[in-house]
Image (cartoon, rainbow, N blue to C red; front, side):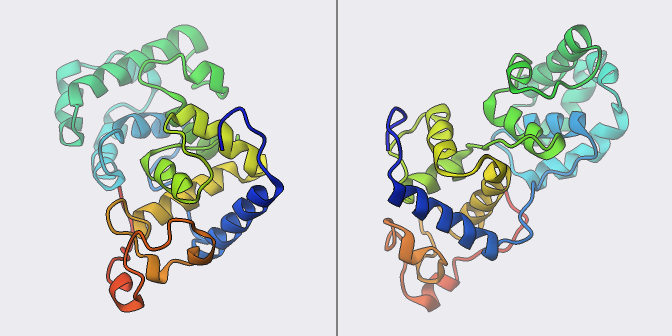
Length: 235
């Protein structure tokens, strides 16, 4: 489906059935970044770019303890922050984003992380994916988190051939009820991390096998496929 097309009733029904099956398969699906408030989630999500959630969660306790407020981040010593987050990769760019984000929140939003998409995406280091993570998980505002797992799976489901994350977001939004967007994102990401891998998906044990046009991309024999299933937590 292209962004400017209306989805067929059959596609909508199949998408909603896939969502129901994923809900049954991953009843505990949730954001795997550790956080206690919107600021912590925003920082953790910035750090998660090109890095596993597991690694971010190893770094953030020290980071959150040293910088408990947005003002602390805004006034942070760059070298000290870089040292704390170094293991997450791209630490100089991430430090720039975190300090810049915090300064913008202080200057424009009186030190309070905004809860609207249009405001969040104006902050340094914050794109639609990061904004939707924060909105959905810290503010309860439904949003679709179009990460690499999400993109791969919705293409495998046959929902779209698009590669642009914003276009994919709008297409999927047409297929599912708005109230399901945040949880659907978690379920898809969990499925992508645990079973529907990029190179060798575990097709033979996938609960979506009967609904997936990409069935057969990976091993279809149950014994072989079961060896590919990974427990969490993940990247």
